Image (cartoon, rainbow, N blue to C red; front, side, top):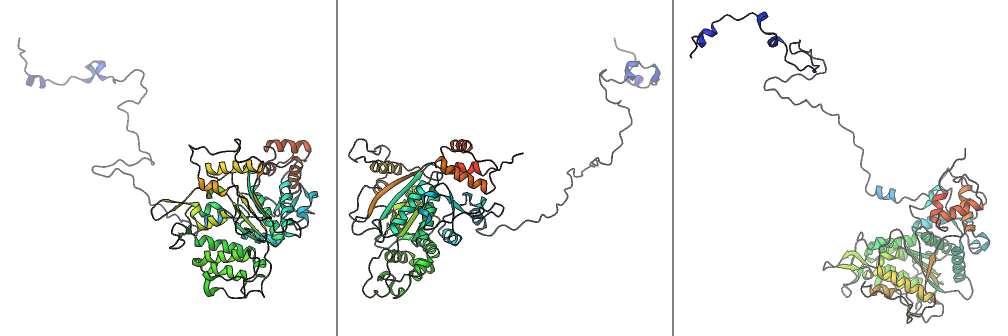
Amino acid sequence: MVSSFCWSCLTRLPPAPRAILPPTLTAQRVAAFHTSTALFSSPVKKKKGDAPVAKFRQAKSAKMKKKKPVERTRPPAVGERKALKKRIVLSNPNALEIEGMQDLSAENMVDARLRGSILGLPVPMLDQLRAVQAFKPKQGWSIFRRPGTVVRRETLELGRLIDGISSEGENKGKVVRKIVTGVKGSGKTVHLLQAMSMAFTKNWVVITVPEAQDLVIANTAYAPLSDENPNVYVQNDATAALLSRTVTANQKVLSSLSVSQAHPALKSAVKPGMTLEALAKLGIQDPAAAWNVFQALWTELTATAPAPGFEKTFKPRPPVLVTMDNLAHWMKESKYNSINCTPIHAHDLVFVRHFLSLLKPNANKPTLPNGGLILYATSASNSPAVYGLTVALKQLAARQAGVNPSSPEYPQPDPYLNADKRVLAVFDASKSTAPKEGALELQTLSGITREEARGFMEYFARSGLLRETVTDAWVGEKWTLAGGGVIGELEKLGRRLRVIA
């Protein structure tokens, strides 16, 4: 049934008063548990910190304040970071000065009564040791008043050997070759430093390669030696640096010796009466001729008689000490590339080839006719894994122990691991016909004895670094904690400050 009212009539009806509306329509429709304010409450006033409401077509992003320019410090100069990393500090003015400390000399370096004590390095010799880079940055020279070394059994043996080669006796002019090995922290590098110090006291000529790795990591220039030998490469800058170290450290000896041989490769640069110091400086001033100059200097140091026309100024040559650290880097391919983009083996570098040839006796004449010591050391902290070197050192130890190379107990390389034959040939068992030229030896450094450890720890106590009573029981405990007297671990235990309340 259609209603008699239309929509227009309904809209004309007067509105009902608010009071007669149902209470459910006037009440606020909110939940009973809600605690918010009423919808019809007065608007909240704006606070000062509130952001203004964006108007129509107005950017809503916050305005960024301009930052004040930051003053940047100047970057370090070229080479400053490297120099700081390699800085050597040899004195600590805060450490106590030890009274009665003896300096290393030609007389006391063979004294067995000083075993276990500390001998200081003479102050005039420090410049020579710095020149040959005998000190390493991570060694603990900077915690004592002055640098010193402990006299251990191997130190006394080394002192007797150098003294015997220098003095008049059956060992005069003897040539000794040694490979020094040992665990990390056993004192291999310090053993080389002790050899250099003793050689300087005897006025030897000291030639060193402080880090073998620097010659094979492609950080110095190289070029083919000549058109006749394109597969052998020369490093002129590295050779010039070697000559610079040699001249600075041995200036007193080289300035007293004169040229006694003819050197056609240097033409008119070498004049009669020229000192060996002036001869070596030719290679420093002109690196292109550095290798020829080094060969001439080596010929002069190994000369036993003057050439015709040089008899007036000839003097007998002193013994020579040759040291090199981190031998393993010379037993593999280097980072240099040939013209065919193939890696160059380290033995193809003429610099490396010369120093490795000193390990094998020369068939024609002695390697060092005036006597000397060839001392190469391995490294246990920065050493590549070279299987050929590992086998060669085992074979060397077996020959030294009296094992015949034809014996089944003699170590043989694994045929499946491809040991480098060139590496094995360096440590070959060939013998020299010269009576005073010995075979290659292997010397393994281990921990020091308890008596030597006691003297070493008393040195820390007298320097003010160790504030404990040094007793036999305490030394035995630290000797055990240091792996049986490993001197590097003993140093870590001794340099910790302990304050007794």
